[in-house]
Length: 92
Image (cartoon, rainbow, N blue to C red; front, side):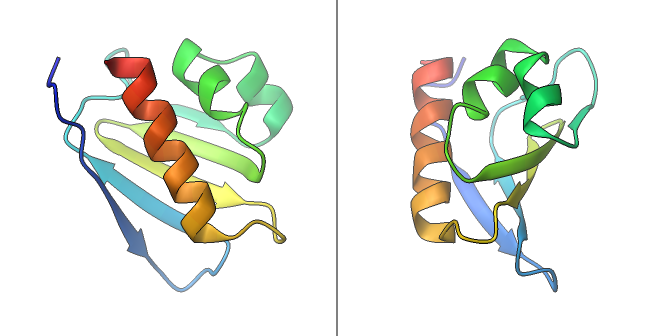
């Protein structure tokens, strides 16, 4: 595994959704989709780790990309920082 993890945010038209592109294969067993926190709590170890973060509402994982939906009251800068930190801790 790489000793450096990069995370780049790509914003689209939906203010409550962002794509986070990494340099890692986050879903080696294939795409994962979690429409709710409850689904994430029963998902892969990575999904379970990420759903511990307050403000994360839904998550899709495919290859090196996370598509994240936030709770409306969550702020993107803090949420992205928390996700980046969780990825680093999970993979390193």
